[in-house]
Each structure stands twice: as structure tokens, then as C-alpha cells.
Length: 268
Image 1 (tube, one colour):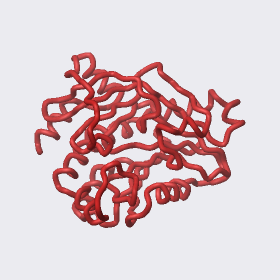
Image 2 (tube, rainbow, N blue to C red; image 1 turned 30 degrees about the vertical axis):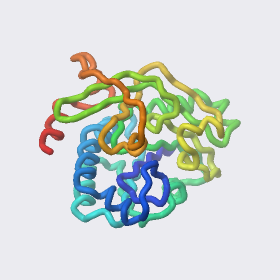
Image 3 (tube, rainbow, N blue to C red; image 1 turned 60 degrees about the horizontal axis):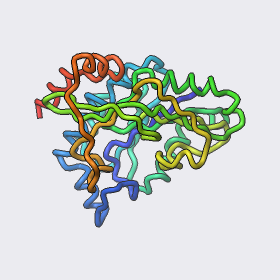
């Protein structure tokens, strides 16, 4: 079954942001500010990409959506850091309504629209477990009776970590949080043109059956300087530095290597 992931990398969509701007030009200036883009690249390189690079099931695609106005040096840098990942395709779009354009991209990526597929979203500052694709595929197979009766089914791995990362390393706390973007997948029946971008992730349970798996941590959600969902007043999440055992777990489960992360962020 085809597995398609979608990652928006500073794409200047019309709508789709909790941080509001008075004009599209202001949004582009905010998204492409050098300090912000440097942090996004640091997180992409150390958190978002390593876990996909080391998936136990390599049979998936990741479409990274960028704006057609992304400066040339940043596009080339993105191409460089994904050059060793045959699953990655960088897709450029002018500013358009966020959900409309993302739905179109996902549906065009389906090799056979009459065949079922699996879809997931992947934020550029989060990680999933290295067995996420394998477990998503296996869970759908395990739920064959439910799948046969449904146009769409969500699969939610709801246990993971909130983490803060930087030159000093990783501080984190384990959480249970249903229907996060990270480690949430969706089955789509053949012939159905719905996509995971038709639904707000935390409301997806209103529209389809969902399967929840809570047996082990499956995501890392980073809190950083430019989280769109945290620019307004929100309750802080207390985190503590990783223990040596947790450092090993982050490397084994999420391919996040603390020494690499320290080096990349210290170079800023």
C-alpha cells in the first residue's frame, strides 16, 4: 500500500496559521526571516529528517512543500540535506489556500487513485519513531475488518515526548496526547479523494473511526522559538534534561543524536 507523507517547510499559505499577519507580504517576511529559517533548518536536520532516514520500512514518500518565493540559497540547502533520501520530493507552490493546495498535492501523489493508500503529516520540527511507517502499515492490516467497512480510518500513536532542544542538548517530558500531528496516520480507501489534510488533526475523530495505540513512545514534539501553535499565551510544559538512558532511547527510537544536535545548534 502506498504511504505518502506531507511536510510544509515555511510554505506561505493563505490561512492555516495561528499567527496572523496583515498581508501576505508580512507573512512571507516572517517565514523567511533569517533567524527563523536557521532554526527551522537546524530542527529539520537534527530532529525531523533523521527519523525518516532510518525508518525500518523504507517504502514511503515524503513531499516537502515550499513556497515558490523561497530564496534560492535556502532551497538549495533543503535539496542538499535531503539529497540522500530517495523518498523525498520537494514541491514548490505559489501562495494558495492551505487546505486546498495540500489536498491537491496529496491526491496527485497517489500512483493509483483507485487503490487504497496511507497518509501522514510530518512537521519540520518533530520526529516520529523509526518504526512509525512499519507500525502504521501493520496496524491497518490488523484492523482489516474495520478498514473494509470505512472510507477512512485514523491511526493515532498517542504517546511521546515534548522536548526543548539546543546547544545544551535535549530536555524533555513524556506525555500522552491524542491526535497530535506527529505519529498520526490515516487510511484512505481506493476511489476516495479525502486526504489527511481535509481534517484538523485534533478533530479527526469526529469524522471517522480511529484506532489508538499507546504501548510505547512514538513521537517527539519540540517546543521552540517559532512554534505556530505556541506564539499566543499558552501554558508552558516543564521539561528536564535527558538521563543517559533517555539519551540512548532518543537515539534508538527517534534517531535524534544529542551530540549531533549540540554541534549543529552551537554552530549558530
